[in-house]
Length: 281
Image (cartoon, rainbow, N blue to C red; front, side, top):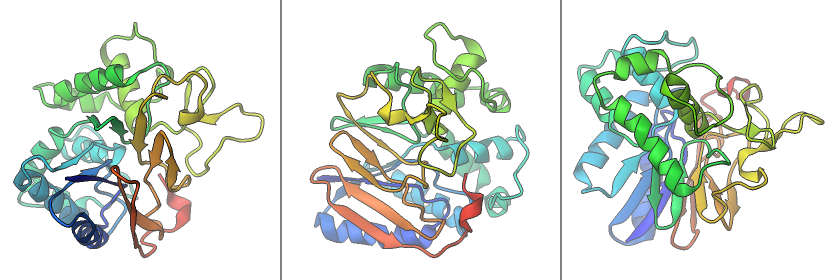
């Protein structure tokens, strides 16, 4: 069975259906399909995209799964009343849906990281201090809280840029927030692993800033595995021996991308520009 990974949908349900059809033809039978998060928001069909992914996951006997991205966590926070909606959100249809509670319960059960066939999957990035095993363990800490009774309090305190550098001694909400920020928001970092959240629309930091893409940090401890991620549309598709970047800007008029992990085969669907490029997040 081939395994395919798909980049950020962001509510582009029509394009997701077209890409899944291409995967079915390419696989020639059953395939495992894994999404790197941000199933919803910004695009035109967030409710349809979320319902479709939930149905696929629940009827696939484990062959379809999706990570939580920053937009998915934001939806959970807004739905729970723990965070105000943003003017740029396209979540109203989900929030008014009769199956809203079922959809939110399904989202709460999604992982923040997966390790599949020597590939470590996250939405945004991995702190340079973490190896694959620690990444999975730390993701599990957040998943446990999200699935527990205190999930609304967690979401209410999830937002913020501090602490901006991982330390094994972090505890409580500081620890959880730092894990979430690395896994779902990180793009650029200083060489010591300090995360920068100011630069969202470029593939590198300003000249002289010292900022580097998280995956180019010296001494990154996940160099021995292939990391698969999305989140960074300004970066576009990245294919390196130990790195697969999948956010090719579907909602911004780019492409929705799938990569077969078995042979690095590339499948893509062209997308309309649902949002102008100036509003990337």
